[in-house]
Length: 402
Image 1 (cartoon, helix red, strand yellow):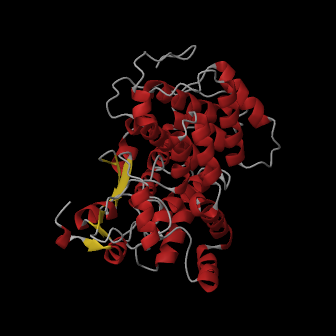
Image 2 (cartoon, rainbow, N blue to C red):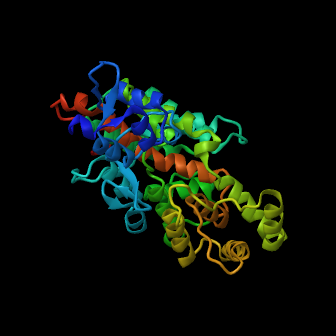
Image 3 (cartoon, one colour):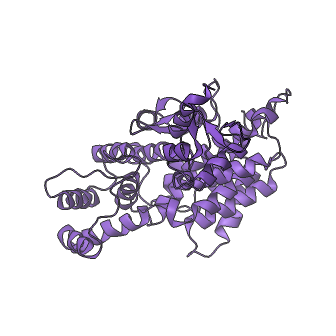
């Protein structure tokens, strides 16, 4: 702490952080911020340097509104209008590396051996049983939640919270998720990467490498995004030492709301209307109704969401369906009216699901599968010192290596 003469009063400190005084004291009570009491024992003063450091830390949307907690995390951050995964540019990683590699980096930058994103047969059978037993009209997100609960129920090692064991559990979970969803290619179990296997559950088009590449990029781009509400839910569950399936389940239920589920489904339907009715008619209607187009503008990226541009660039190289991609280009050209638009990640994902012939809710399913990687990374942070007390080598799953 600096000398008291350099400290800020409660009102000045709250104004510096852009929060209410009550929120400021909530930070103190949680141990996130220190204070110095005045000579009267009632007045509080705060170090401006510590306040500035807190102001630049990733925070939840609720905290940004002055009412929620601030959570510091090394997993990811938005800085300089870019998304960073443990200090690495997320867009560059998603463009050049597999989703499995991105997930592994989020979980531990020190891990040398790659994880196998496959699951034992009994896990896949449980996932398929619960998923296929639901009516065909059930949303993909609801199927995903059911699968997570089913796998957690049959996993006898779910309470093993050692870091290596949690990473094995996470890879197993993601593998069972993509293999447990009903497939669009006749029900055959697919081999290959997470993106290749998820493709078969979302699209009836052949899983050609060039077509699957944008899906792999989308998964990497969506793997984490600082501390969102769903991520905070996962961390709360993990702070109570709930097992990873419970943490992911808590996050999935929080994800199911308009704040975090995004606008990918709306953009998907908008692109379908533009293909049918023409982009001019659809853009005109949207501007008349709302004076804005869905899928553009992000508060954290005033100059444009780099994730959206990255995914659009990858899609443009070799889109899954050339005719549908032309509809996307026409919509962008019409909406921009000669000015380049800055599509968000929601628009990029919608362009992917639309051109690949996926259902409108596929975008939320892609987000849920991808974000499992980030949620688990945050649960590992929450388990923290508790899991470091264990020194026994973690077990491996039957039929697979760590």
